[in-house]
Structure formats: structure tokens, C-alpha cells
Length: 196
Image (cartoon, rainbow, N blue to C red):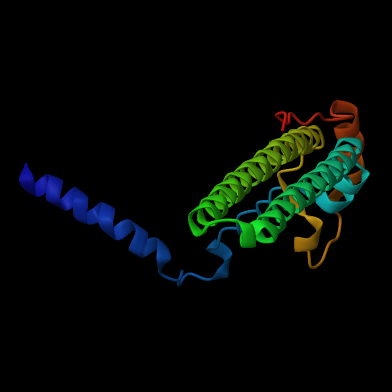
């Protein structure tokens, strides 16, 4: 029984080797080559993110709001700096009439106000940055969803940024459609800023 199984295994193993050997009987016994399998269709799309964001009403509104908040922050910073500078000048003018202990105490109190003001201004700057980062993220997420839907609708399997493309031929440019869809879906955006 073992001999039969062994013989069958040897015979089966030698079949592929025999099939690979050239046919000595001549070319008439050759089989026709298998038909070529066509390459799958792979549709590529491109988008110009910068152009979309330049045309986005929400991104434009966000840019305007950011500029307004930066100007407000700069005014607040300048105002605080002038106030602290005026306090320092007042202390220096009084220096001659103050005892060393009182002068040192006033300088210490001024330094505490400077530190407190600096901390408050940094916190405000961080709050502004976080609010605008969050709003910008909402625009980017919405744009990504728009691009995904357009790609699915047009049977596009890969979407790349226009600036990453060195050569293009027969690709789907989704830029204009994505920009229009983004403006329809997100015409404006609000930024939630805490009160100063």
C-alpha cells in the first residue's frame, strides 16, 4: 500500500516537469498562448486644494475673522503694554520720595502684574489659535468628504493633490466640482471665541 502511494506521488511530481520539457514532436502540438488579461481600469483624480480654499466662502470668512481677531489681540497687547509701562514710569518718578522698602515693594507688585498680564495674554492667544484651528479643521473635514463623494460618483480610485502630479493624461480634475460642492455644503463658518 505504501508503495502504491509513493509511486503515485512520484508520478504526480514528475508531471509538471514533463509539461515544462520542450515538445520533441514538433510545433504542431503546442497549445495557443493564454489570452492576455486586460489591465484593470484605474481612474485617478486630481484636486488643487489651494485653489479650492481660495474660492471657498467659508475659508474666506474664516480668514477675515482671523485677521479681525489678530488686530483685536494686537490692540489689547499694545494697551496692556502701555498701561504697564506707565505704571513703571510712575514708580520711577516717585523713587526719590520713596523708601527703599516701599520702592522694592512697588517694583515687586508691578512685576507680579506684568507676569499675570503676560499669562493672560498667552492664554488668550492660545484660545484664539485653538478656535481657528478647530474651524479650519471643520473646513478640511468637509472638503475631504466632498472629494470622497465626488471620487465615488465618478468611479475614481485615487485622488492626489495637483502639486504632486508631474505628468497627467486622462485624469479627472475634481477641483471645480469640489469647490462648488464645498461652498454649497459649508457656505460660512463661525468661530467660537471665549470672551476676553
